[in-house]
Amino acid sequence: SYELTQPPSLSVSPGQTANITCSGEKLGDKYACWYQQKPGQSPVVVIYQDTKRPPGIPERFSGSNSGNTATLTISGTQAMDEADYYCQAWDRTTGVVFGGGTKLTVL
Amino acid sequence: QVTLKESGPVLVKPTETLTLTCTVSGFSLNNARMGVSWIRQPPGKALEWLAHIFANDEKSYRTSLKSRLTISKDTSRSQVVLTMTNVDSVDTATYYCARIQGGFSQGLFDYWGQGILVTVSS
Image (cartoon, rainbow over all chains, first blue to last red):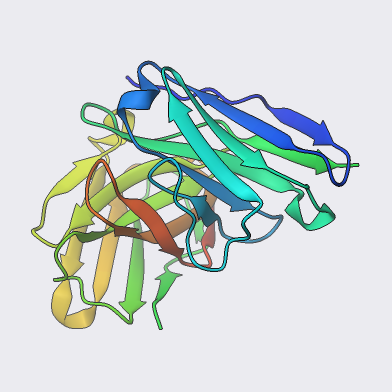
């Protein structure tokens, strides 16, 4: 079955750039999405189809996907960006796949 | 305004069947290239996709749970129903329904329900 792997945690200082990675076999051949989930809330999509940003999502959120790795980049990270982030892709055999999530801490 | 709302029991006993309903508004379940998924999240753990159903009634299930899950839709009532048989304590989780926009392979979950915490305990 298809799997996506994320680092469990990442810490950044306010104003720094956060790069959250998501690895999977030939992930670059698929579309990747990224979801932000704050405590007690439902997930919110921040990036879809690798690089697209839904309306209302700040420009500091961007994405890329190539080879075996998709990356969510948060430029000028703010305290409000502290959350869990999940990558997601579709696989013909497995269906919908989520990564294990990355807890972003803004110190 | 698109909304999804989960409903069902918050407490079920081991071996029982869990039935969850997702009532949607602001879009039609007949809308092409749209679908609804059920996704769960055990306490403190990651998101886990369970099943989805599209407007053309195409369905797909998580491989490890396929024998226990059934997803269906009632377009006239704007509802998507998920049943899970023979529940166990490991099925304790918050269950979300979410709209799929864009179809298989390029779709995204653009709207989510608030989730319902289901506890499996005797």
